[in-house]
Length: 460
Image (tube, rainbow, N blue to C red; front, side, top):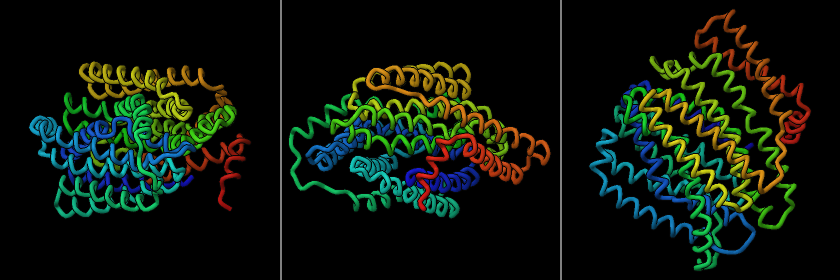
């Protein structure tokens, strides 16, 4: 719950900042900002290369060892190598991004890797609630600086400066809560990190291809203005997936600890069933709501952004598939089968990259959205197949069906409300609130499991 509420705070801060950036910078310059962040995301993969997953797994286990310090040493070495490579490739990067931003990426990369490493260690030390709070801290400080500087006339430079400040503030706060073992790192610890990272690195690439491969390829085939619209649609779709991501992140260290301690397989199977039951809690009604009012909601970001309405629908469905896929992969990794997720991630990445290139080339941004969705569907099937090999899976079809039914009841009310009261932005915002109340009210009334879950988690 702490993680989810933190993500909501992140979404609110990011939502406000994005509106300011899109309206102040304009579609083209905001599109350039998005492209730079996409390049940064891919560069950060080279700076991590599976290390965060390995550190989180080894730290979360109940064994001995100083994986915090050994991981930090490896992380610093990898960053130094990538920074040198960026300097060598500077002319080509600047040409691709259409802005002189290579040095900016090197500085942002340092903050991003440090922030990510701190959060990874906190997750591994079963302090997910602490690492979760870092997200709103990072995004809020980042948004405040960005909005202040951009409105003051600093343009893209202000947006980049806000990013750096946000990561520095969150990293310093998070580092305070980390417990560092007093033992010296041994060769065995570096070896065990390598054993896991040699398979988990592809998981990072899989995640990044899903999150931003389409953006990078779009930058080749379409204008930065369309990239900006596409990114906004993607951000809204990702907002609905927040709860599922929170569940996945929270349960991983618990599953990992149970597995490493020789716990019952039934315990892990029960946790997987819970994660599947609630992964779609928000994104299922979100997808229905996007279909009903998404065209109006997109106008919040400025004129022209409503062109991304159909892209929003396709990408929201992609996020739904990817969310369920993530729960299966999360379980496989927690059970210490990184070799199985390696095969899944390899297939996902290959299909995603291949389809993105071909379909974007032929059909523009619709092709990019379809490529993302198809690869998510393939990943879901593969992750279910391999998860079923290592653990008993009981898919909570009844609970998911009740969420779909509640979303349909909500849809009827919102559709009638829009037909009666019109499509002004104020009306739509009101209908969104009413729709959410109807959805959760319906789910509470028809689902005993959901009522029980709410009762157990209300902090009273």
